[in-house]
Image: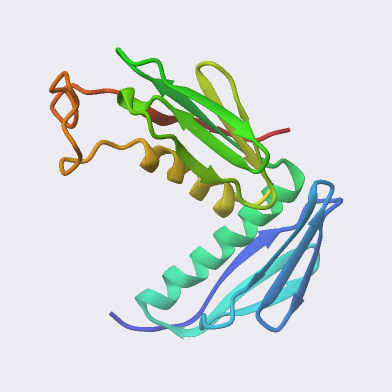
Length: 190
């Protein structure tokens, strides 16, 4: 595939949001907070323009074109995070053993997963707010990567694996076992 001499993508900056670009470091400030990211090892040029940010690359092959779109997408997510925030909703699903989830300090504690006595404890990252009800866990924050990673960690902590101790009822890891915590909605806080 031939290289293109110039590839660029433009990211609009809404009112009330300030984006500072210094070299490969991007700082986005908005009504909900500040996000900072360094795109140091990525072969693109990031520069401010009139009311927008331009991500560009010269003599770009296929991978460089994809990287331009990826960096622009990260900057858009940062802008959405500081203006509207991110919310991941997870559903607690169980068929026989009633599973509980609660927040204590900076930890999320999951009890009675598949009837186990041991508790599953997850440390809540800085900048993430977690609330747990009887059936739902809600994870909120302005940094999409941190919020989505913590939601994925919760889901992974209650994933059944084939190498674990078999439950007394012979159901663990077998077909049709639905017990776990699953992401069912991704939305904005505002």
